[in-house]
Amino acid sequence: MKYRKFPHKVSVRLSDSEKEKLELNASLSDLKVSAYIRHIILNTKPPTHKFDKTMAVQVAKIGNNLNQIAKHANTHKTIDGIVLKQILDINKKLDDLISQKLIQEVKHVSKIL
Image (cartoon, rainbow, N blue to C red; front, top):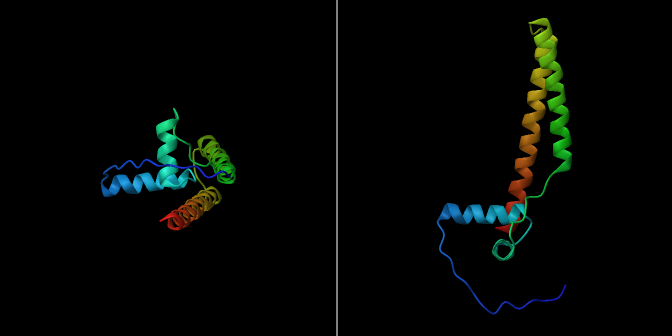
């Protein structure tokens, strides 16, 4: 990769929360803060956050299961023990996915900070 020179420095004052948001957005875009700012200034759209396809597939499957459970509940007008267990299992899977994603993001941000 060719080294680029950046002879001009621009200074900006931010609050603590603004700085944290900037660092998080840069991290999620897999860029250093200076590269993220340059990208925002020089391009019409800021870089998008990385999309976790595996997570999206897992959430879609869980959503499909929820739809089937909702259909069953609407058809039979009751929720039996089996359906309730399925709902609790889905809730646990969602909690696990959210926890997993949060841990990944915290590790990613920790590397940058």
